[in-house]
Image 1: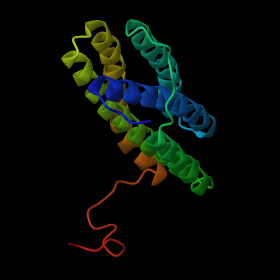
Image 2: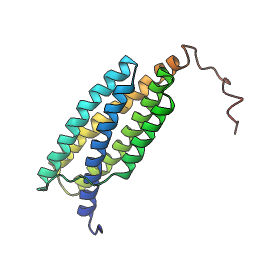
Image 3: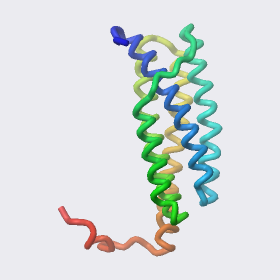
Image 4: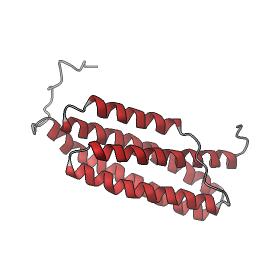
Length: 179
């Protein structure tokens, strides 16, 4: 379908993130089954309920616009979820390494969502849709908070994966070329 107006572009992108949130929800449920670190599991569990609320918020956006919710296949989400599934399988032999992979995959999800919500909020502001802005802003704030939590947990997850040793300068020098 051709997109000919900014409103059509907004609706398309709304459908895209609506689909993405559904895909990410399934991905988070799979991550939760594979995670072993308790803090990571709690973070994923919390974000699953946030994602369910974000889906309801998007449905509220559709209602505010007088439209029915419609999922538009999000190829970006499909790729991110597929990457996450692949890295979980590839790290299945080491629980701590898999936890790091799960956190990395979750971080990619959050940043994709953050970029999307920022663009949608700008569009809604320009269209004068304050109720829509408010609902999307709630989603953005949750995504930004989750991204910060993931980033804060990364050092501990990496430490566990390394067996508790500290990463020291030059440790990877033979495997990593200098530029």
